[in-house]
Image 1 (tube, rainbow, N blue to C red):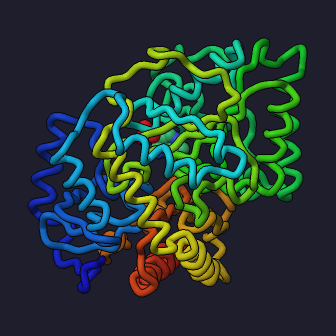
Image 2: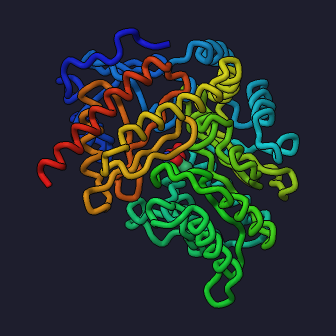
Image 3: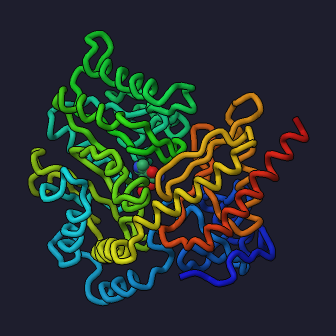
Length: 451
Ligand code: PMP
C-alpha cells in the first residue's frame, strides 16, 4: 500500500505547489500553508505516502490530522465506495443498508458499557457537528445548561464547540459564546510540574468545586465534556484515575459525561477508543475524522439508551449521515479488524515513542514524549525549560525538505505531533524516524550553537 520510492524529494517548495497556494490564498486567506509559508499542494496518496504536484513523495505522518487511519486511497474501502456511489448517494436520514450496517459495526466496537445499549445520531459531516449534537443532548437530557470543559481542549469551530474549547486563540474574536461554560485544568504533569497523581487530584478537585461550590460553581450543570487524550492541546495523555474520577463526579451530580473521541478514537491509540484504555464508559461519545473511512466527512454522536432521546426532528440537518461515507466507515472498521491494525498501532506506537526517547536521552530540548498507540506527541523546550515552538517549526521544515510530513500541537505550538495512518509499515516508520531524529539533532544543535 505504499510507493516504493518514498520519500523522494527533488524540489521543495516546488513551482507548481507555489502557484496553486498563491491562487488559493487570493480567495481564502485562512488557507493552511505547510509548514508555515512553505507551499505544498498534494495530488495523490496511497497508504502512508502522498505525492505533491511537483512530483515529490513524502511519508505522511499526520494523515490529514488523524483522518486516514486505513491509509490514503485504501482499495478495500474504495471498492465499497464506488459500488455505493453507483447505487445511492444521499437520502437525508431515511433507513439504508449502509446506515444500519454502520450502526451495527459501531455497536460491535463500542466501549463495553455502551455495547448493546448504544444509540447513534449522525448529526452532520464534521466533528464540530457531533460536538454541537452532544451539547444539545446533555441539555435536553438533564434540563441543565452549564458545561465543564478543560484548559487546552479543542472541540471545533462552531459556537458551542468553540465555547468548550480551552484555548483563547481559537475564539477570542467571537464572543459572546455559550455563557455557562467553565474550564478546569486538564492533568498535564509535564507542563504543570506535578507528579501524575497530584495533577489528577488537582484537576478533579477543581471540577468538584465547579460543580459543588455554592459561591463559584455552575448553577445548573448539564455535563462534563472532555477529550480522553487531548489532541490539539499537545497529545496530553492524562494519568490514571482522571477519567474514572470524572465518571464518579458525573454520577454523584447526576450530569452527563461526554468524551470527545474525534481525534483519539477509531483505532488511533491501538484500542477502538482512547477511553477503552481507562475502561471508563461515557454517557455520550463523539466520533468524526477517521469515521468517514477514506476521508469522507462524517461524524456521529453515540449515547447510552438511558438518556432521554429526541423525537423525530428534534435534531435536524440535511446531511445526517452521508450514505457513501457511512459505507466507507463500516468498510474501514472491517479493514482495521481484518488486518489486526489495533495491535499494529500499539506495537508501532511503542516503537516510535522508544525511538523518540532515545533521541530525548541526552537532549535537554526534548522534554517529554507521550501518547498512546499511533497518537504521539514530543514536547520541546528551550534551555530555560520554556516552550520552544521555534524548534518544532524548524523540525517540521527539515522533515518536509527530507520527505516526511509531521504536524504540530500544544498551547504554544511546541509539541511535535505524529498521527500516521495505522497502515504505516515498520519499514516506512523506520525511514520516517531516521529523518525525524536527524531533524531534532539538526534543530537542537543549532540552538546550542546560537545560545
Ligand atoms: N474535537 C476534537 C478532539 C478535534 O480534534 C477536532 C478537530 N481537530 C474537532 C473536535 C473538530 O472537528 P472538525 O474539525 O471536523 O469540525
